[in-house]
Image (cartoon, rainbow, N blue to C red; front, side, top):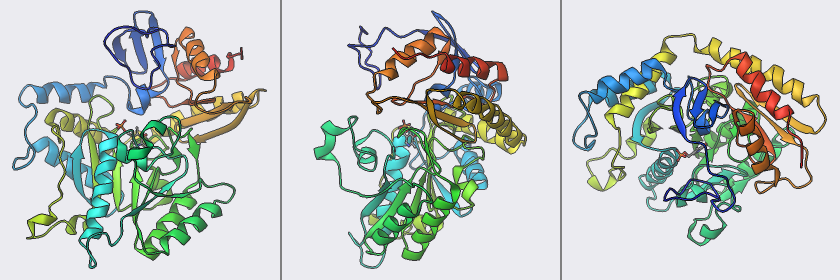
Length: 417
Ligand SMILES: *Cc1c(COP(=O)(O)O)cnc(C)c1O
């Protein structure tokens, strides 16, 4: 049982043990009151280079000495301007405008609003196209809007009455033609405003992976029918999939891209929704009713933007590709070793992310093994949070071979009840 005033996210206080208290973070490690943990899930996918990367922490300290939050309507500041220019340089081609917010969910909400705003401004106007297509098993956040475009299940059943309707396409199986065919039929109706996808890896849906050519097909169908493509790169961005963006593997550019988790290297919260010129121009008008009506209080926090800029400089300095390749190779070896053992099925990897399923009769998020596995990993000094019976390792890029040996060793040592 967990007691006290803090209500933890995605946590059943009645059944879970009191959590360790984190006292210091360093690289791939979390030092707690119960000893050191290897952070094998990058603290829920946000930490990229490692905890407290010196360049990022220095940017935060220096900026905090002269700036804190300032209103971002009617004012601007250099960290936001420089970061936006840098994001446009690094993003897939054609994404020329940067709208800041403060979480992945908000970045997605902004993307959906931009897409509807785009169609509102087209001939035919209001309601000309308002339907959103989503992929089965997707996750885009926990607000009402982002739950609406995500998979429905035990997480959001209670909120169903408040959610808006969307059209769903199946997760790609086999050659993935099932997905393309379903999407082509929907796109042909002329009612679809946008398709939103997690490119290549569906994170919270179970680290499900599909190849780049399917993403390329979806882009082509969007082009053929004038549907906007929204890439939710909140988890996949900043190198997780082995390239800076998952979209880079498919050599495509979305019309709208959402980024958050790794944007500041994970140090402080920040999000951005990048838009193509047509999406921006649809809102650019002497008619003030066409303004993009969205803001968060902490939009473009200067300290967070400075952290983002320091992260961006690490990417622009070169050497990141070699770092990603190193982590990917370490992961591939260890995943193959575990996959050769009995009791483990469905090994999969995309870049630095590796996942495998415990072979169980009762799968799914509420599978009994989830909490048991988590406790087992903590006992082994490893922070892992299986998604149901799927175990995934998504480490910060400073992780060593010895760290990963410890992580995969702990997974291999798990024995069922
Ligand atoms: C985590 C996540 C989000 C939501 O981000 P928050 O910062 O938790 O609101 C959205 N989309 C994807 C793909 C994510 O993994």
